[in-house]
Image (cartoon, rainbow, N blue to C red; front, side, top):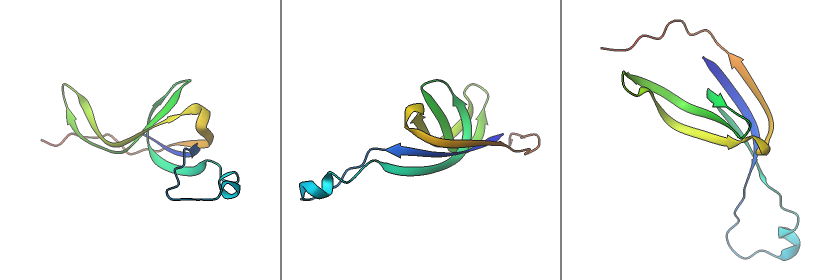
Length: 90
């Protein structure tokens, strides 16, 4: 299993009236996300917060997944951890 830390830029929305001078100083929101590494390609990295219950037809079920565009990533670190053999509950 691999765990991934991703530091990336996301869009930002600001509600309510704000002066133009203030808005011209605001940039993207910097996010830090940690999760279970699923896969990546040239476009995106995919991670999940939880993997649970193994379904023979569908495989592992995932919860709270994130798909982050590679072009938004400032830095990332993928760490391999040894969890032993995962056994399905009966």
